Image (cartoon, rainbow, N blue to C red; front, side):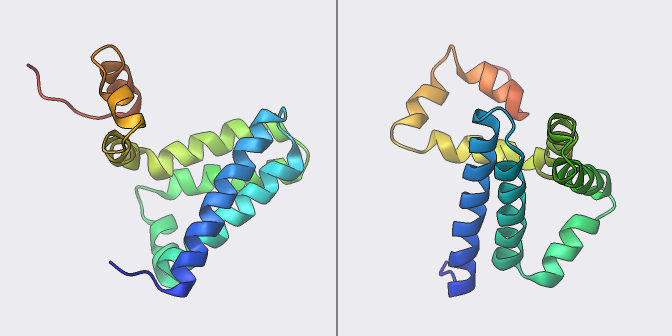
Length: 138
């Protein structure tokens, strides 16, 4: 699958948004970094899937609560209620992308260095439970 130039920029913006959000957490909830991470993430999603699909994704009936929490959390971060905004926004992210965490874990398990760690018998059940991966009983 080939990506267009806009989608390549979207991937870069989304990854940059994730990094800024992560740096905002590491710097004890720095408001500017968290806000910049949110903006870059939303621009990235918009560039990757397009305007109409972005609108459809955020307004699906089963995603509306997650969208509302994400937007309210981002707004609270901008209003200097950083920690409360982060908590509410995190609930929104789980609501929006919660069903995608299993896909991410399965992808990470195919990576050379991270894969064996995530597939280790002592680590795998914990990661599966956190990501919501359904595993057949042995």
